[in-house]
Image 1 (cartoon, rainbow, N blue to C red):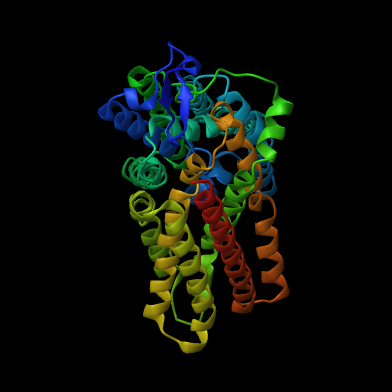
Image 2: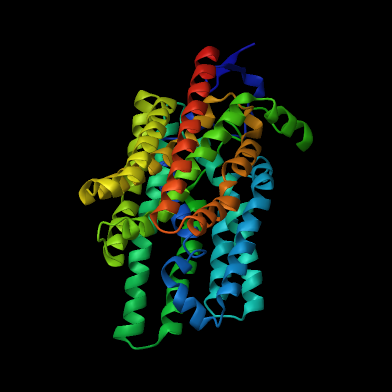
Length: 438
């Protein structure tokens, strides 16, 4: 029987390829990179509207007439929606064309944003935030990752996922700059007040989501359900059992679990900068952390390119080791007193964090996951990998209360450094397994 070569190098019967599907290699490089660019813009546009509290929390409390507790409830609902949606998100991505799910997600989020811009009451906000959890978690998350996996060639996974994370960070930074300029113009130049300023910011993100969603769907092409894979067979329980028997799935989940710890740890850098005894003001700490954010495109894209050239697992291993060493150095530096070195380490850990984020989903393509259940694999891995969202803030809070001052942060970063070592071990095991399988 005639055969076709799968992206992993295995030969597949031509009879297993649907004539109505388009494998990534048959789509022009220009089209694939255009699709990637629009996915990057979509990912960079869809999440900021959910997390406006990062820049506008005081304004939100005032114009939406919320208490801090009520605002916390909104984000608790959002986080719970994400956690519940990870597994069905992957299942859905295996059954519906990802480009269709991305369209629904962008337009749905934009429409919820238009409702949000009316500055509704608390009961309506509960519905809106629950809706955000559906449109950005259930229908968007796995679909986006799977679509990038589909449009990237076998030797492009690192750069495509690196561009996804790094480019998304760049889009978020650019949109945030435009949004804050619009907010200042509305509230100060026009003197229209905080409510109008916040409304304009929400409208900016909402309209942008709708436009990007429609543009993406218009230019994208249906890509093979899995580059030469068989059509959906079996049932959900059987598919889950298949995935749980693959050691590489657990190793990828462990790597993402460890890498996500490092990312969440960077949220504490601003406070540590101020309390580390270096005389760094709140404003200067904010500037340093902002510079770190602009390193995301460098770390994500650069890490992806290095991964394709020198091996994705090799760069991940090096990144975990450098992150662990840097965190240990950050723990020791307050006693040494070198401000310049301390700030340099903060930026280095930030850069390494984005390198890890840019690579850890790219390794899934090497792990011999059955092609027709890649989306489900993404859902299962996400459920494990992003679990730190549910408890790491509690660990941080406990250590900060139990050991006031810089000591709490030092224990916290020590814990993260240990997790980095575990991430390096998981990466080494994955490297060995992949090498053994060829």
